[in-house]
Image 1 (cartoon, rainbow, N blue to C red):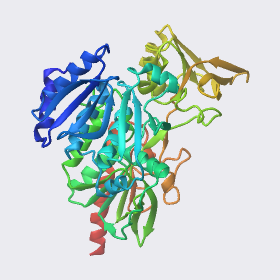
Image 2: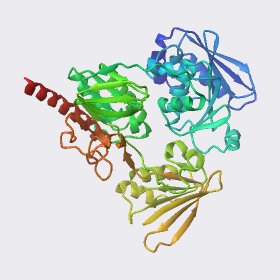
Image 3: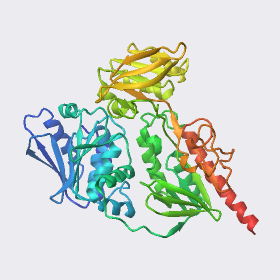
Image 4: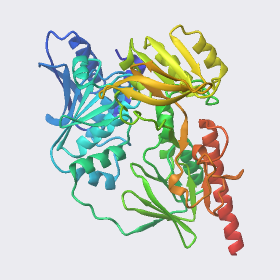
Length: 519
């Protein structure tokens, strides 16, 4: 199941393992997937002398991880190939104290302070690009706090269980048998939700104010670029972000990164993290910025950890988030028929009818992907014609199970209380109402800038973007903005990277000029 190149990569990853690990397989001898799981795990175990695979009879198709013969808090009811292969590898590395995904000391103490014994179950799909982030975050928490037990369940192997729980989106996380979380999330967001649900032992808040030369608010392509360029100038830099990667992590195929003909969001994010690690940058992940202030000309950030960071220069690169329809039924049915990621949740709609709201590139790409699974796909576009690239329109028009409705306004989403069953829209030409009977709605109407935190500090345009000049300067000296949160035209990865580096270079030039004027 693992080709030679992949085995060589795994061997390299496991070279530094200190502990002995056992992949303890519990599986019924009559289970049709038994041999596939055993063969898969034996190949993984064969990549290191520190690993072994042990098979015993059991009721389910499952395996758990033992470290030096001692049970851990992690269990898989899955054959973790596909996107979840990295989840298995990271679980082993993390248990041995290895892995850049492990949180810093401040976050670790918060995890250790969670109250009560907890059983978490994450229902995932091997084709889901968002599931690994959630599964890996909860695994890391279970390693840090042994009172947390985490079980990863492949919905494709446990279809009856998924049907009984009415799961229509992944990842779906259950806490002690109750639905706790649906959809993509980060370590910091999940930890905050667990703290709210479980409570925790209060942690002392440091009164220390940390001084830097440059603060980078955001961890997407623009943020990573700004941090690297600033660090290369010999400046002391802090990058504050929920997670490094931003929206890029949700992108499946990337074919317009010049010099790289094809890559994926997850690969690009991994490369960004490795490049960032080459420089002396304080990476403060799993945090939100809660307050931005000007204090005697200095820019001061207060994080969700209570930390205070100060610098003469602030580069805002907080990116953008998926825009929502904000219509009746949308919020109610998120995870039960309303979705935002066709790659993640598309498999739940095999043979069913779905609608895609949005006629831009993201909407057309989602419709094309869904056409291979759904029995019928209807694209809904507010304008009188589609906005996506012509090559995507041509592909869409060639698909027999895709319908296109333009010049219509989505007004509400209907359901039976448990799941979606219809989309309601109005024809803009004559105001007549129509109802489309469907099983799911995929919302693809673009992005909204993450600029609200800074609205009292810098000027925004009508779209909520931070206004900047050609050098990424805002109207406030020492504050710069770049990427999707800014007014720069065209929201592309390569543009965000270039703008991030431009903001850093401008900040450095302004720093030199200030010093010259001071002398």
